[in-house]
Length: 167
Image (tube, rainbow, N blue to C red; front, top):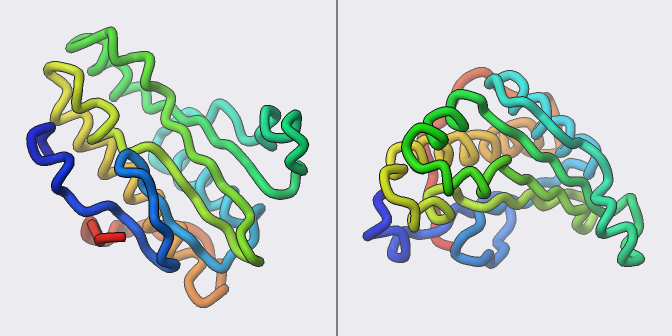
């Protein structure tokens, strides 16, 4: 995706119909919060990301939202960080990638910012942004596969075709 068509591209949504902001990728699954968090972390680690945080979102806890309803995962891929540093260091502020996992009616909702949208304002990063966006979508697809029909079987090695579905 190039910055010129970012606004017209449908948003990624799957499993439950949840309206999301234009800059977010979102998926709802029937797995419990802890299982969805485990799938996010293991998938990111499997693909070489450094996971910086897998803990209850402390800021949410401080805002009187209980620990059992939210988790935040921060992840960085060193190869993409180096590409961003080489081509437009001002965009490093957008890293690491952030995934928010929220308990939702016995299941979980996972959100992350879409790098294709977030990096659209930075010159020279269109290809890096597209690749990071594809990786984020792959994480969400892994959650869908792992949590489909409440089986919660774990991340899959194979990547499904990219899905961009109107929410």
